[in-house]
Length: 132
Image 1 (cartoon, one colour):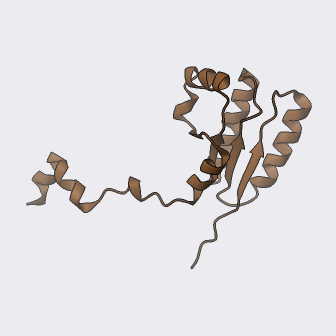
Image 2: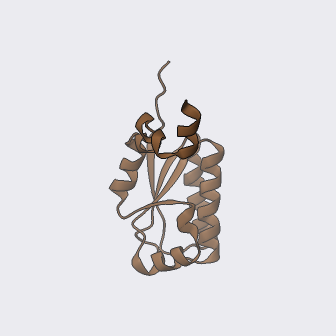
Image 3: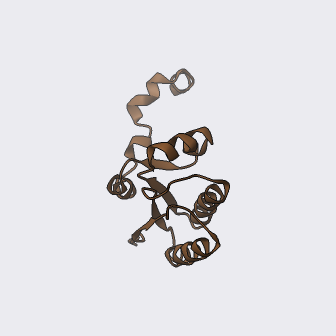
């Protein structure tokens, strides 16, 4: 059985959020979440501030994607916003890329680098001791 991955959606974030923009953004996001395993890149290049409502929105996006076995990538965070992003410790929750193209490509690459190779087992003393 072949699994066709869902398309990768690129959604630009506005400079700032107000109630109307949040509603519009969430409506657009909902249509991307209809797929199983949604793959979404949030283009942050227009973002000018990282306030609590924006952080909350990013976390909600991540939560909804994860509930559906999908993923969210952030791309092109401006330098001033990036500093705030790092201080808020959100960088540990999101995969962040310097360009939208790289964020999109990250969904397409195989994650072979996360698989432990058989030759790597010798570097772990507990595994080596149990091999005999």
